[in-house]
Length: 258
Image (spheres, one colour):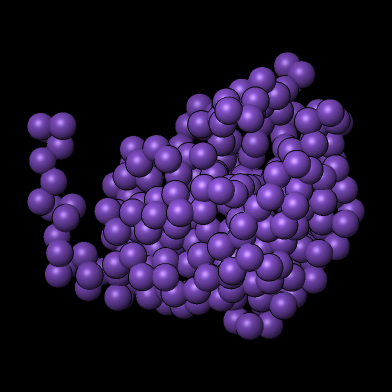
């Protein structure tokens, strides 16, 4: 089966769920009109990293997810994007919800917290990887900083992921790391990568966007640049399987030695 994937890139308004949801509501309609079946949103897209009132904002997430379910059913979309989720100890999880044609299929809590910006103080890390069984096939989910830990993406590939989705808020000046790591995860695991990054100035941080859809050879099928917008590209399971047969990395592995 071939599918069409979309990444939605925008400037997240910190602490303003209503404004962010308004933008996303309109963007989902646009990508659906372009034939998308999978739509990826940035990391913490509904609230941003509004640390001062993050626990309070996390209480709104359930309501936002309910509306996403309605939008998913209306547009016949699989929608993925992360939001704050109450952790019950004063902190929150950074949680990606996977919504498939109106149904909340599963959730993934970000494993690796970016201590450089204090995420480990405000957030609680998850304790498991996520391979979502959706109507489009198995989809792996990682969040932003998780991209720097190749073991996680490899585990998802070994479990059967055909595409890995990466919601992120990845700031300047590390855009070359972003691009290189995305392509590396696609190449080494011979699968599709769909990434959605924030763009513009959010708080004190400047985000470069560069949301991308990358094929199993590491070729960039679509790049959103630095401005708000959406990208759409086809993903071909047949092409992916043919490439894996041509260069059989998985069957040539020797995991007993490493």
